[in-house]
Length: 308
Image 1 (tube, rainbow, N blue to C red):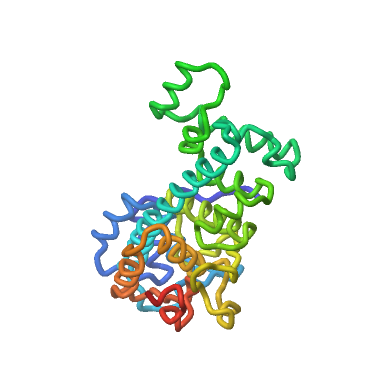
Image 2: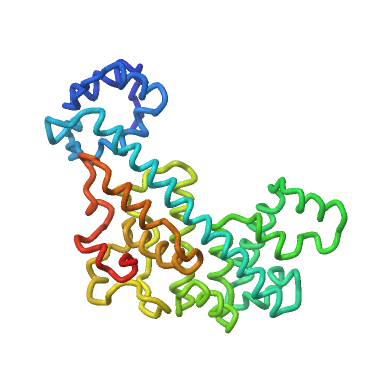
């Protein structure tokens, strides 16, 4: 099928939305927003409130939704991304540190991550892909310590673990941890984060890196179904979620991820303000916001991980 849709001016965009039933109490304000936030980006926030069945013209399902309500939802999502990104930074920095610290001291080798024997359960192709990702991340880095290493040393070609793992992406770190053979060191790292199962912790890192990328690229996290389903941990060093409630937790929704973030950050940063800041954000008046769209159960604040 040939794509035949034509570009619309800002005024035409407003007219189109108005024809579909969106109210504009302040067209000048709407025009200003649409000059800076694309019509297509805002579509992610209007979509749930429109008729999107085949052959429908995306009419709004309620007649009292105003453009201001959509912008309010957009701003809420932006603030939520900022809050989540701040907490994920703590987790990302900690996993960089743990991988470097634990394995370099165990092996007494600053370049242990280049040794395939630590990844013996991975195929040679899988290991090569991982090393290519590490190499690309290191070569893209503008950090002075990377430049210094390349200027001063020519062997090994790659910097030691405490340099390299500081500049690789969260996604690469996640893959590296997952591909490591099961051994006491791998479990030791998971336990630092309060998770007793290495495979579950590998899943958490994967889910965190996916969420981190959504935040970094300004993608919607409100009302999103994430591509990585979070495994709900049972073997934890602290209370996480009640086993009788886990069936009600949607593993591809934001609440499951927020619960895992809260659990880990409470270990890494005691006395943090994540719950307080999240609660303030959720308690603001957002007319279109429904917590169930993000997977929040009704009793979410009574679950063990959220009680303190």
